[in-house]
Length: 296
Image 1 (spheres, rainbow, N blue to C red):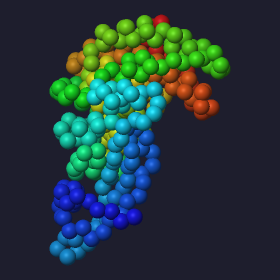
Image 2 (image 1 turned 180 degrees about the vertical axis):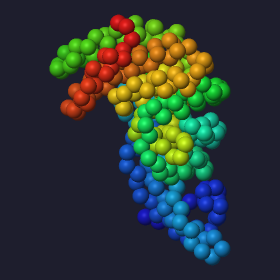
Image 3 (image 1 turned 90 degrees about the vertical axis):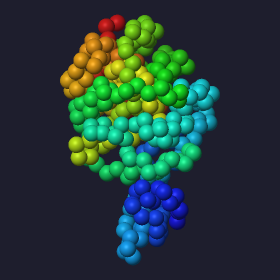
């Protein structure tokens, strides 16, 4: 369908303002908690009488309407707060590289952001971990009131898992039953600025950069938490690459505690979700979370 684009978005994206035509088509795979609609706008602008093609991504956010997090997500410090991503782009709070970066933003209009249409190759876990470590080691902690708090703690506070009616690996049940002890130990781990949903599906390699999408969960988390999400998406351990990148910015034993605890608890919770929804569990999944768990 034909669409219009704000003039300043056109100017930022193309260097021109004379729109000849534009159409929009949905982008599949954008499933963030606060994601309303993601479309790719493609068209042409006129430059010195000649048509020049362009594409931009238009992302609309919306509040949660249902689910156990819907009421709490109205709070600006909740991990699923719906306004966070537009606010982060408007405040220029996201990394711009080199290394880890967000898509370039061409404009924010209330609950709509216009973003660079990024095309790249699949990112590797080790390179993503290296760029993540460099960013977290050097990032200056902002003070915005809408940054997410401890996501894992918020999730577990409202999560009740019944393992009695499923054929679950007892190792995962043991991890889940130790959740309060593990959270208590996690409280001593230093916090770092966090993407909040750093998995391979949200990452592409572009030149020398790792471009990360979906910054709606930007906030503070125990150091190692983003690394755990990355590892669970790859079922491989990228912690050596991360530790090499952070250097002395964080104690390595604290990084590993944050990494292993987040990986174990998140992994056990996701196993329950997969079994509840009759989704095939990846081969080696429980072996991986058990091998990389903290001591129980």
